[in-house]
Image (cartoon, rainbow, N blue to C red; front, side):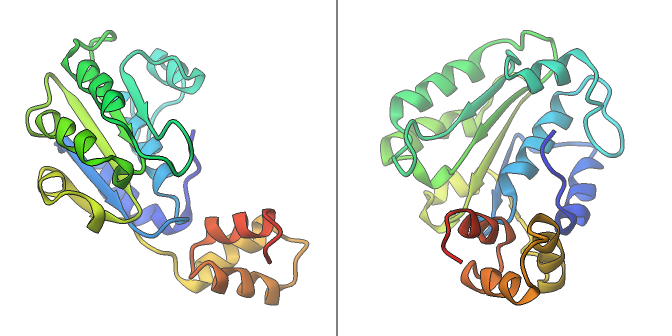
Length: 209
């Protein structure tokens, strides 16, 4: 299961306790704050046959298939190559998936990241599925730069800002990941990453600290 970051706890409780879920969410915020992990946790919860207050049970058929990467009702859409656009043919595959009946009899889930990577044709191809998703389908769009999305895409989603951690939480999390480093270096990494702890960790791994 995706990591549960401490700065997401309040938002997670809010999402997990919803009785009715939107057909499309736009999870947005700066890069490096764990939006992808939050989307993966929410997808697991919404597909789970026996969800708990904390999230997906982890043991039902749906959870086991999702963990194995073989859940037939989960569609993960990302650029084919890093930093390249999401193409219209990829979105057409997504549209075909949305039109199908759920094979396990529950929800279908789409996770699309980063949403702003869609080129104009791809974004336009997605609009109808966002407006009228067939069956019980939930689309989770993750965006680092929501201003780059078409207004018609944004307006069809429930927009949810994802929190940037406080400096204290970010520092504590980074210290737990890199206990061998001095606190001053943790602070330097976070400053370089403009407060995004996952980005700070990646900067260190890339040797840019």
